[in-house]
Amino acid sequence: MLTEKTLEKIKQIQKNYHSKKSAVMGALMAVQRDSGNNLTREDMDAVAKILDVNPVEIHAVAGFYTMYNWKKPVGRHHIQVCWNLSCSLLGAEHLISHMEKTLGITLGETTPDSMFTLTTAECLGSCGTAPMMQIGDDYYEDLTVEKVDKILADLRARS
Ligand code: FES
Image 1 (tube, rainbow, N blue to C red):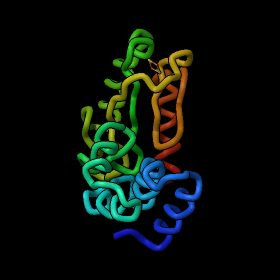
Image 2 (image 1 turned 90 degrees about the horizontal axis):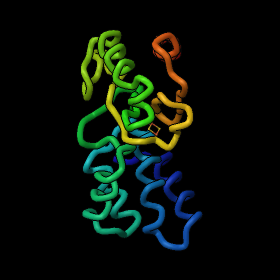
Image 3 (image 1 turned 90 degrees about the vertical axis):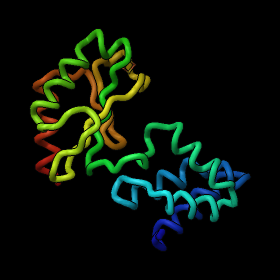
Image 4 (image 1 turned 180 degrees about the vertical axis):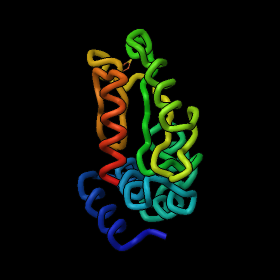
């Protein structure tokens, strides 16, 4: 069930567009952010109703974009490591292996404390600063094992 705060956000997002349908992506992201980084089918159906859009279309949007977390719950920090060409050539796989070892999980898994989920992503449009990863809304670029360790430690300290 969407909170008043989330409903207000969706209302504000709608004001940016001429049609309700155009607000789908922003509305889904607002719901996800307000719901612990995850979307449920009920949330998506609620967005469909608010925006007067067929629920199938909402599910199609959420299914197409990797930024929506609904297939499987993710942890507080969703780490998406780009493993497309530039990032792979510059060591993405090595970084993924390192994070798997450090976090004690494999790709697609979430740490037992629900702090981190480790996944891959296709090109995130930052090839010039490869290897890189996205965590939440933030990009982390020109990564090394040392940088990754510091990022994870900082996120742990912040949580
Ligand atoms: S290949 Fe990784 S950002 Fe483009």
